[in-house]
Length: 195
Image (cartoon, rainbow, N blue to C red; front, top):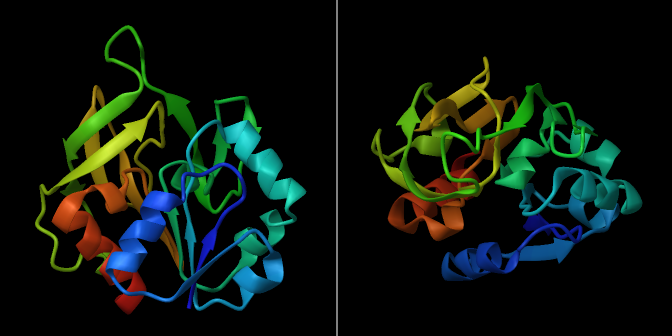
């Protein structure tokens, strides 16, 4: 059973549609005991980092998300919230992955970054099993996590940034796998079946 964390700061419906297509059992919850008893956790998110962290605190989810030993997949803002900090609202995040999320330079590129981008696989990870290096994924973000020791895939939008990270049981993708066609569905399947 997969728990999809619905804490009021994520568009979970597109993720649920993908899970329905994959015929995966899931629950949608903002309650710690329900999420804790799931086998795996999907942590989506859209919007502003400080608002999202407030919602996590209000739902008493911060500690559980920081210490869980279950495989967890953060998507878009969900990945950014795995970092130590976001410059969006000067926000302290979950601190699972070192680094600070910063905004793209609006003088150099259009912000938000919206659309398909090539993803380079930088490190072996079961999350990308069977996915071609250079596959394209769909992005929709204004902030990014710079490349760090836990970057498993990167992309370029003015700067090279972490498109995916992995630290122990925590996985994060800046793109939306549920909106990324065949490669995205393969990545979700890998998380569900192999992580």
